[in-house]
Length: 184
Ligand SMILES: [Zn+2]
Image 1 (cartoon, rainbow, N blue to C red):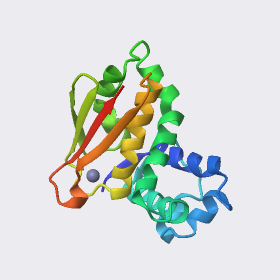
Image 2 (image 1 turned 135 degrees about the horizontal axis):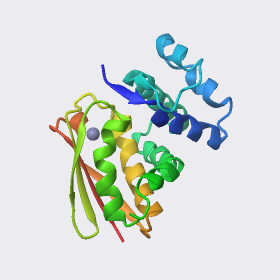
Image 3 (image 1 turned 90 degrees about the vertical axis):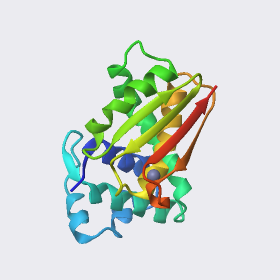
Image 4 (image 1 turned 120 degrees about the horizontal axis):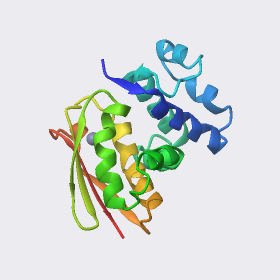
């Protein structure tokens, strides 16, 4: 089974806490399966690996409860988590603060975050095409979170504005998920 790193889960929990949602994470966790809910009884550890449903079910619960079930809402969560992780990412990439370099160097780090799938990137002048291969079971909520994450990282690296679309997605029957980003 696919596994995901604790820091990704913690970013989502931090979003819920930061938003001031009534009842916080505990209220969101009411809709989780009992198996997954049990994992949330202990503190999620940054560096530990968790079964993918722990993340997947939380993303869906957050979207249903906080975003009225609209998958587009997840971009906001992704944007928040990119700022939250920003400091760690910039420590890794100290001195590489152009958008192009940051995103090109961030893509190969996917395996630090999730043990399934890999990113291939093509970087142009102000554009990035990132293909996520080998992860046909990715949650559509996760797919919808990534554009917000990419935009957030771009802004953190100095872009004035950015736009990210997903022209291809496994949940729409495509072979891979493709993210197309442009920024100024
Ligand atoms: Zn996708």
